[in-house]
Image 1 (cartoon, helix red, strand yellow):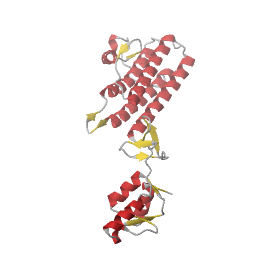
Image 2 (image 1 turned 135 degrees about the horizontal axis):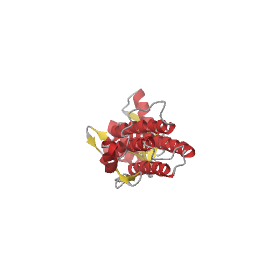
Image 3 (image 1 turned 180 degrees about the vertical axis):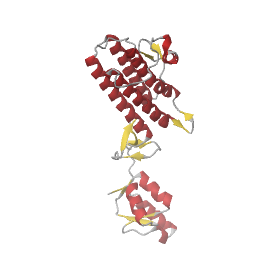
Image 4 (image 1 turned 90 degrees about the horizontal axis):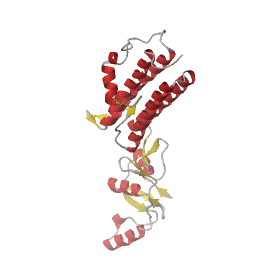
Length: 261
């Protein structure tokens, strides 16, 4: 029989105890042993004399006999973020970074799920638009946005700095910010003041993506900023510009930069 920490905790919650009796030959996990030690619980093997009722010599004999209660020292399959370890993966947890487990509802997993969902929406929208409007410039611009988001996802998962990113026709993040500060210097119509029923279908689809990108930025802030401390400035800057990049494509459509007839 294997005695785990979870089993001990369940029994202890139901009714606290100072001693715990096991069958001879029972295997204890290291965490189970630690739980007994922390709670000051005496381990008793059935059929053997408790150490509290014996002399010093007898105590030594009992301790020697208790060595038969084996401990499991094989390397656990998984470890947790707080240093805990698991021999099996709980259903409510998932793997990140090799054998590290976190809860499926953690901020990190929620954030990664939102990134994957947005990427799926971006790919689907691009596919739909390209099938209707196979303009080469438009295709290249959308592919650059997709690549940009994929690079963000990889940088977050591998904990690498995101740098030297270019989008659309070789524009940097700084270039895009400058264009959107003074769009009339680049587009005759300037800003798109309203999206209405009269707007092109492509603009409607991209406008929805634009606001989904803003929601993704909020998720990034929830995950990467804690007590006003920014953990990944590079990623926050990238998510901040993502909706702007999509808006820039909308402006290009509105100003006839693509052949979307």
